[in-house]
Length: 603
Image 1 (cartoon, rainbow, N blue to C red):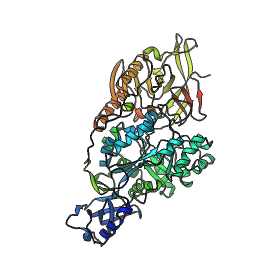
Image 2: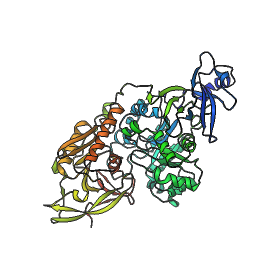
Image 3: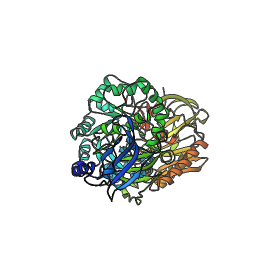
Image 4: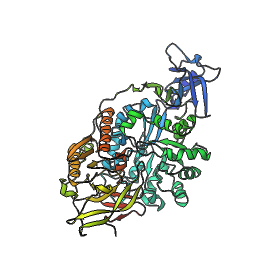
């Protein structure tokens, strides 16, 4: 059975494995002469044989022992001389929607890089289309060998009372999903203030997950390591990917929390803290690797977990230790180590055969003992998924956007006016609350491109609520023109940014017409467009096609003056109302320390 985390449960086939291990019946497959990366003992076991049956490992021939006794007339044999056998890599926290494709296309892209499993939080889709949308996403996933393990979105919306989303999820719905076959836990509990104040729904979502015996994943985005962090962990939250410093990571691990070390397309946290963590000498058993968000062009051109492993090793991490962080440690975090995470008898035969432990290039990838990718190419190709209509008609602004829509009124006289703006930190999810001066003319506030101050506007696109949009400013992108996107975490409303009203209007109109996505406009010309008609988040085209469009979008950003890495993702979190410091939703500015609304004009 595909996508239920193992081909057969162990209790169904343990007698067969016993027979194969003793040579009483032939294995389905034997891998010979591999250098086995033993994540259970932190060793490389040279010239090891691996016998596989029923999708599971039956026998390891270590040292002078071989698996010749497991080979029969029907047994397939792979000669792995010179190759390194590792467990399949697992991404401990990922939002598939960030790759702008559905899960089957995502699988086709990442499996050839050695990824056998992902722990996916589809809260992007859920904020637009609710649990019915999540069901559709994972129906698509079931058509591939990738083990797409679902963590139920916990914060839909991310923060109550500050934005308008397309759907909502409460504790009763979370409880219902805990019975789904593909659910392994609760998605990132971003509402850490709700947990600390024992807000009923937040606490109940955690309770329902714990009652089901499943993992609760976290999002503790502040560098507070005493009472608040203790309380957050005591509630039952077991892991967190939002660490900014070495001290944050060590504090979480000391309190028994798994720390997920992040290296995605935009969020390059790993280099900031991994060298310091290694220098500290702490045990790494509670450290995991994750990408969180990856652009399609990152995956197509650079890879997935293999990319993160390369980065970890380049930062001084021992290769076996790094592999543990995305195999055994990950499986233990989610309570799945009885089935996954190591190449040992009884475990699922999710195995990579790598050229070396530097580039981590997979020559062959097996999932449940089946060869699913070879030399960088997937050996499976699902037909395009038939997305339901409710997921492909999600642009409902209720107004026609024109340049006049972006006329920010003020009662201040002509001249400089102090306004609040979102200050962007390249490569970071954190923002700043800064005060800047912009020109006022004829009762209107203008952008100030000379000083890198753009207008920003967020429209409710879910309810057709005419006029429910907000006005703001942003600094740090350095662009001329306008950009718009419907990937704006977490409500995924329509976000528009630019230095002039005409380009901003064209950008918004373009996305309304194509059903959502991202667009770059300069001097009233569309420079690049990525159409994302599924929830305004995902394409229905092959991942390679989408990657090409995203690459052209990034080139457009550069031509417009932006030099930061993956600016699309940085722009996409301008509305993320659960991460400090200042964010902009369709209702206005949100102070994400006090969770109070802030005015546009500063005193």
